[in-house]
Length: 257
Image 1 (cartoon, rainbow, N blue to C red):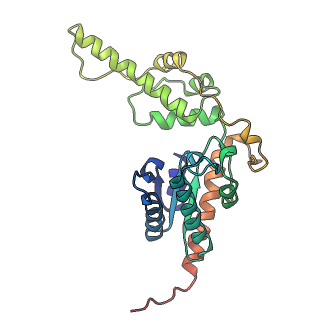
Image 2 (image 1 turned 120 degrees about the vertical axis):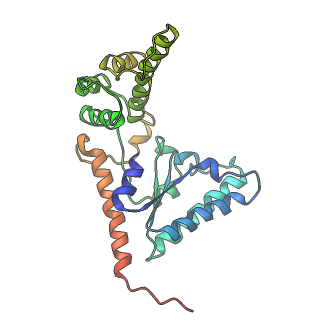
Image 3 (image 1 turned 180 degrees about the vertical axis):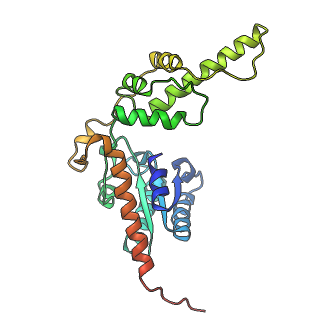
C-alpha cells in the first residue's frame, strides 16, 4: 500500500515485481525476465520497480546458492547500476523487507535511502481502520478511537485481517436467518461489537527482524512516529520528482533517422 501511494504521489508508473514470476525451470530465462522488467520500466518511465520481501530475492550470497539464482542477482544488480549511471533514466527501485539483516551488503549500498516503517501508533491505526472500512456498510456509531486502542501492537495487515474477520459475522447471521426461513435482502451493517469480537480471536503479529533493525545500516528517522509513514512517502516522492524534473530540463539529443 505504501509503495503504491509513493507511485501515485510522484506520478510514476508502478511495476510490482513478484519473485515467483521471475523464476523459471528453463536455464537462463530468469535473467531474461529480469532484463524485461528493466526494459519495461525504461519504456514507461518515470517508473518505480517495487520488490516486496526483497530478502528472498536479493539476500546474502552464499556458496550453497543455486547458479540460476546467483546469475539472476548479478543480472539485476548490473541492470540497476546501468540506470543509476544514466542521467536520463527516471526509474527508481523500491523494496520492502522485514529482515534487513538478511540483505546482501552490495544491495544495501545501492539503496540511497532506507526507512523503517514501524508498528503504527493509535492515531495511525485509527486512520487505517477508516481507510479499510471506507465505503463499507458500517454503523455510524462505531468508535474508531476505541477500536484503535484495542489494536495496540497490530500492523496494518493485522488490522485489515481483523476487519475481514468482522465482516464475516453479518454474513453468517444472514445465512443463519435464511436457514431458519427468514429471508433478508442484504447483511446488516457492521457493528462495533463485530470488530471487538474479531479482535478477541485475532493474534497479534510478531514484530519481525527486531535484532536486524539494530544494524547501523538501518537508521531510524528522527521524525515523530505519528508522521513516520507520511514522511517516508514525502521524501521518496520528492526524490522521484527531482529525477523527473532534472530529466525534463536537460535537452534531448535528436534521434537518428
